[in-house]
Image 1 (cartoon, rainbow, N blue to C red):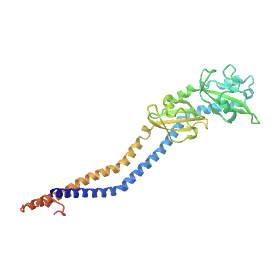
Image 2: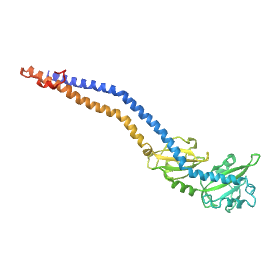
Image 3: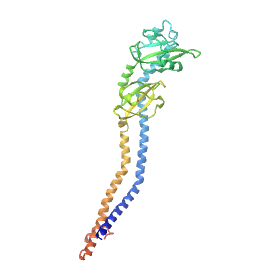
Amino acid sequence: MKVQKDAAPLRVERSLRTRLLLVVIIALLPAAIVSVVQGLDRIQRDGEEVRALLVQTARATASDEQNLLASAEQILRAHANQPDVRQAAPGCSLALENALRGLSFFPNMARVDRDGTVACSALPNEPLNYRDSNWWGIARETPGFFITEPAFSPVTNSIVMRGVLPLRNIDGTFDGTLNISLDVQWLDFMLQTQQLPEGAVAALFNRTGALITASDQNEAAEIFGGGVRPELSNQLLSGFGQDGEEWSYAVAPVRGSTTYIGFAMPNAVLFRSTYVHVATDLLLPALMLGLASIAIWIATDRLVLRWIDYLRRVANAYSRGHYAVRPNVLESAPSEFR
């Protein structure tokens, strides 16, 4: 019988606390749902803001490179219709040499005939033929200016990438190209001296998505996987750095569709505020529930259970014949117990 008498108050205590807790959970449920929805919405909005930030920063970072490539194309177009250059006349080499005078980042310029043979160039060189080069087939099919992949030039004795302007006759037939060499070291210098945000990496890619140069070659090779897909321009993409850290990056065209700039930043830096805000949105309901549970526990004990226990002790005293006991302490109890 004693076990039954002791178990009854425990059942009352558990039932009361459980019911109060359920009431609080039901009351807080709408707020919890709103907080979760706000957290998910914040993730989506911050992701879009990060994408826009990366694209804008990429374009701003590539401004110097874009001006350099624009200058290369303007030089080619300005000389493409000069008779000496177009016809590879005796004055062709001198005209190309004068065009590059004082432009150290453009080490050479050459006129290539329809068969792929260098007809004249700003720098003296041995006879060269580009018919078997990868870019030659592109030049025959491409109407506009484009940039080739970096390659060693035996003429300049350095790594260069070529700006190529395909030439066409009046009837539209292919008439060779006019090329200008861009010193890759200059592009390296321009990227590495950029004032980039904390931990950021910028990289330049050609039309096929192959890496040309970067502010940090080793890190860029890991983050961008050695290249990019130009068709994913202006999208938010992700990769992993050398230490396995996750990065986000965006790719934006620099000069039409001939070159691209990739700009990447660590997620730990990009989404630092997002992590804090989302954690706050998701943890707030849990914190509210925890505080409410503590309040219920204390209030139930002080306002209800202690008086039930007191009445039980009084009843036990009466059952043993101690009728002189008077529950004077109940004067400070809630009115229901009084």
